[in-house]
Image (cartoon, rainbow, N blue to C red; front, side):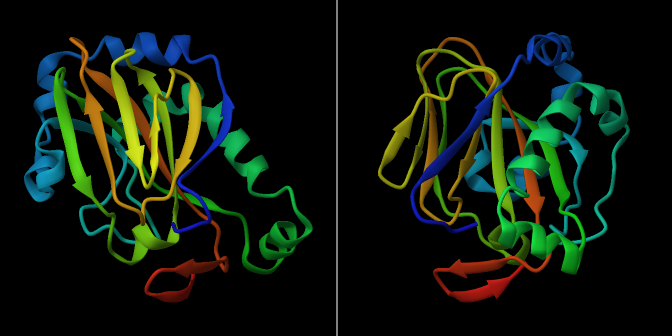
Length: 202
């Protein structure tokens, strides 16, 4: 979603249990589904484990994968914070009363290999324009940077960042270890979105 600025930090969390679970994934689990990196050239050096995801990038009725239930208790505090973050203002609460609560349309774990990059790109497609794209680093290193718009950010483990995915962004992992982010796409129905291509409604 487009907003004023490059990125917003929404908080910091204890993700030690989540990190331990993610670190326990076997290599064949990371390599099982290669559709995302095959579809998007920018993500060639990544691997993805899907929790809530559809290949058509739909905007409603997401498909839950078995891994979502496995991670439910570990990511619930993050979800609670996101719901609270987007219901703070009177305008947000009015929107919820009128259109119903927000929901997650996609949740994935994405690993970027050591000494690799996600090349510059802009997220496109209706649903990606209308969702809040929220990253939580689970495993990272000091030589990993997320670059969006004019900002070059070292996102530390457990921090929650919303990125303006309608700006050009890329990732540099200059470390000797892979980086893993939990990416959550959150939708608030009825929200006005001022996209570069014109106003839209989530």
